[in-house]
Amino acid sequence: MPELPDLEIYRENLQPLVIGKQIASVSILYPKTMQLISEEDFIRAVSGATLTSIRRLGKRLLFGLDTGEGGMRLDGCASDDVW
Image (cartoon, rainbow, N blue to C red; front, side, top):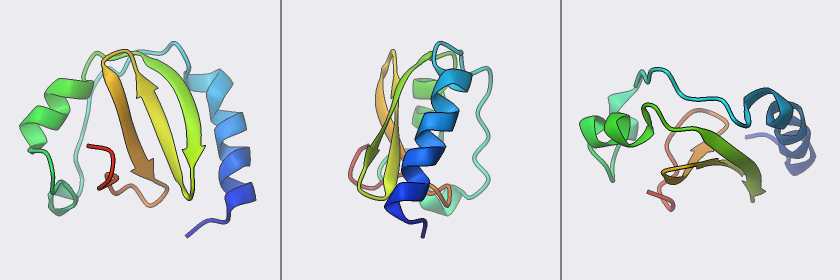
């Protein structure tokens, strides 16, 4: 698991690259990580959404979307406390 300063640097570096960009497609590589939302609902929720913000909450980066907010741990698992 990354340290908090590392996540803050990732957030700072990602922000200018992704804010305002639209999600063109979604691939779920590990379906077992989708525990609180079905794969189909997740794909429908984020496909075509625009990234509006990135913030850090503990050891997670939260990606704000114009359709709501989702969280991802750095290892790629969907946050269980956001969806």
